[in-house]
Image (cartoon, rainbow, N blue to C red; front, side):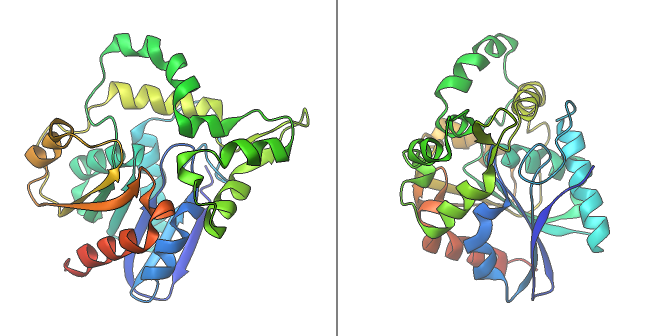
Length: 267
């Protein structure tokens, strides 16, 4: 299993940045640059994404966590601060429960699907695949130009900044049939959804320092959505930021400052 990653190696404090489903490590470019002086930062492409290995099966949380612990061991890190987005927010909560000594803090950026999902919801997954905006980036597209035109309409790319353009260009490839599509694989999509459905994020309280970042136009807008985090994260800071589900792409200045302030408070 090969994990590709970006690295900022100016500072010393270990910091791991985990992207969400269908994204790649480059989404953290702005945050990495912002924090580089004080941290040793690594942003991996999760398995099934970007330039990392893309197995046909095994997208369990256990395997993803094992990938990250192997990477940390390679880097010589006994523990690290974790910033996680969307699906990897649930991964961070599970990791904090299973092996808390590896995590100094967890930052959850608009996390999703924290509970175990009812089995009947699996029947709706094909419908979800067709309507969830971020999965529309998978393609296929007849040409590169068509891919760019359609992806620029998605909410995470609405500013079309230089970083957003780089994220798009890094995450797309031409397929053997000459069409264009995401490097994120269908096997990874299906496997991650299965894992998300089967494994609860919270079983017992978690004491690790945690930051919940709530974008004003994110998916966590109601109190009932945030209550499980307030109940189970015993050392929780909640911060609201502007932007949508991808505040690090759409409102990076405010997002970067929020993360930096929380991390600065940790020992």
